[in-house]
Amino acid sequence: MSDQSKDICKIEIRGLRKSFGSNEVLKNINLGVAKGGVVALIGPSGSGKSTLLRCINLLVVPNGGSVRVGETRFAFGEGAKLPDVKTLARFRATTGMVFQHFNLFPHMTTLQNVMEGPVTVRRMPKADAEKLARAQLAKVGLLEKADQYPATLSGGQKQRVAIARALAMEPDVMLFDEATSALDPELVGEVLGVMQQLASEGMTMVIVTHEIAFAREVAGRVVFMRDGVVVEDGPARQVIDSPREAATRAFLSHFHRTGALPPATTAS
Amino acid sequence: MYQWDFGILWGYRWLFLNGLGVTVGFTIVIVLLGLVFGLVAALAMLSRFGWLRGIALTFVEAFRCTPILVQLIWFYYALPILAGVEMTPITASALALSLYGGSFYSEIIRGGIVSIDSGQSEAGAALGMTPRQTMRRIVLPQAIKRMIPALMNQSIIQFKNTSLVSVLAVPDLVYQSQVAAHDSYRPLETYTAVALAYAAILIPLTIIVRRGEKRLAVSE
Image 1 (cartoon, each protein chain N blue to C red):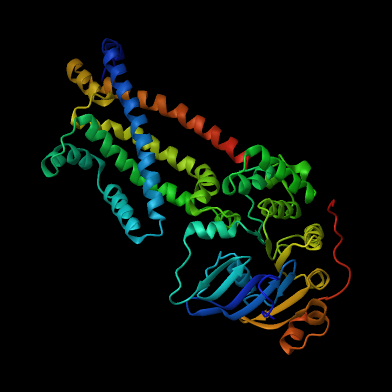
Image 2: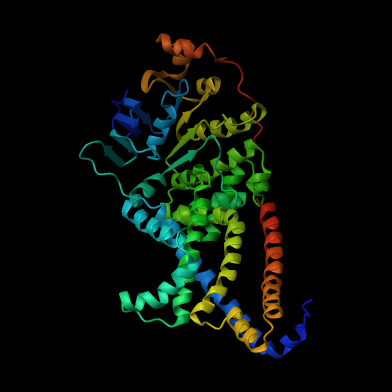
């Protein structure tokens, strides 16, 4: 799976290992994501999928193996020097991340949330950043909420603002860490709608999700993980409709795999 | 029965006003300096570097766990002998009180910082901010809101602690009132008036802060 040549593989993970104390969370993970590819990571909780996602932008620093996003590659393990904070920051600026609990900045308005990255990290003049931020808010259908504080928004709106905030950095890659898991069921659709739209625009995306129907519909590939290893990896419909491995079958038996996606209510 | 006679204090009004000015000025200096020491110590306590945390912890515990009165005397009398640093009573007491206050402020500030959800720093980091930018733009603005009541409380204590500088003959309100009490033979009236003067300044302040807190809570 990771044999694709470098120019089409946007994300490349080789031999990745991570332990928290004596608990080995990731055991020799190999994963490649093509440019414009959408990969869904699924698996039971504790399988290591969120840790894997956080290793891609180095929010979690691996113990071994290597991570490459675009042109930047980091190797970990014995003899490898840990990247310094400036290098890490520059690297993370090129990957957008959306969190399960939104993690919006509560002391800033929606607009300021989205402007924060461009202004503080990219040193963009305020006026340009505001224009960019308004465009991103319009994209997720929340331009009219620009001057409100996050506390006044619904969960679905918060998550769409969080997506706009990540997009304002104009990242090459978007990482979604259970972006809809904290939402009330009726609010899931509006967030999935935005994600689906991003995927259709050719954004490279890695999505940790429990929305199996969404993964089947939107992801090109599905990777099933359990106990820190990749159990099955293949085209989304193949893995979800006719899994090869018994563990995958057992996991998927808990879900409705097909059927309509929750209605997307977002303005385009 | 004791015959109260507050009228006699009128003759000392300029002395009291003078002392009050020194007390208020002193408080402003030691609160501001103390906040600076406290912020530096708090950030050092949260540092990645063990040696820096060690220094900060030593500072905090040394000043938090010894009496301020002893520190004042020590700064004025012991430092010149031990380190050859001569200080005026005002400098010595300003330094001692600022460091003493800083040791308490630092724990308040550190507590406020660690109370902010780690998801906030993660979100900053994910945007590509350095830890320093995340601290300044994301964590501190939120943490300060939570610190304000405790910082205010500590500053009130600091205001009252300035009364101890009279032992180094700094002419604050308490020192001047001692002068007045000895001169007038009316210590009861004098110290009652002094206590009321402290309260008259602090009570409005606490009301203002309580109002400000309510306003900040609304914007959250």
